[in-house]
Image 1 (cartoon, one colour):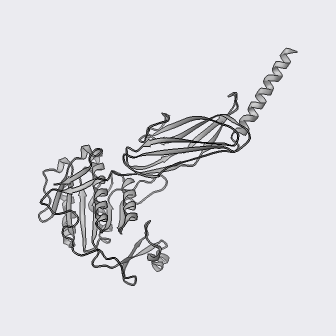
Image 2 (image 1 turned 45 degrees about the vertical axis):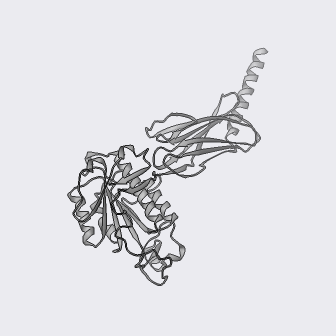
Image 3 (image 1 turned 135 degrees about the horizontal axis):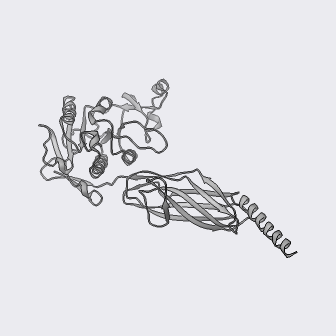
Length: 389
């Protein structure tokens, strides 16, 4: 008799536990986000997870396992290894009463620029006794974009300012809406009134008008992301990051001085969910929104390219304007890169060359070309300014 009672009790407990585990994932909701999804290198931002139990059944335990980038540093939270070297698992254990919602904040220190994806993951829960466990996949992801460092760029006393030298004219406040010389692909930040609907319909993609303004000050930044002339020699990560910081800081300075800025690079913008162009071209633009576009582009820029800088010129030259200054930033110097400078000179461009890295400290640029040297790549995480000498 006692045995039968015991067996019945065990069966009842197991039945209740099994039913509890089945119902435990019903009405269980998960969301995650960042307080700010765009930050700068060195910033700390909160990664927020919210879990809601939208039912009357309490949940004594819930385990949340979320895939996170290994390169991002969590200041709080339990991280466990992942089978991929570039990933880790953020694991948290919680409990929820009926119709309760909890929120957890994990401070994240951004020690690398880039675009980082948090998620997917798995929610695990079950009965109060822990006999049965059910899982619910987390399909959503949260993206964090970390901009490169921005520092002051100053020129050694006695040399002309890098942006204002050789530029004539003033920034126009108004453009003639009936006078445009070309069209280009739409980029975020362009105004809807500037869309050229005729070419948009013809090419089946958004095109915007490029207005003529002979008095507009323009700067084109040409960035070579490669740090060795021959691909198999590898990558110098410190110099590569230093080059990106230079481009970002000069772009910011030029935009603050009222210039229209264009960015061209042989680097590719990394995207976690879709393919992008093998090179990067950001058309001329001005203002804070354009700076944001450039910073986001540089945040996602790969530090290696299969293309040499001279190989992207055919696509770049069509966007350059004759009244533009070209600031060519590179960490390598040789016959091929010298050809780029000479070609730009033949087109009538005012070329400024910046040779970055201590390996180029004693090299001279072509005759007649304003050449600067930028040093300090080994300390790019700490520097507050870059001196052009």
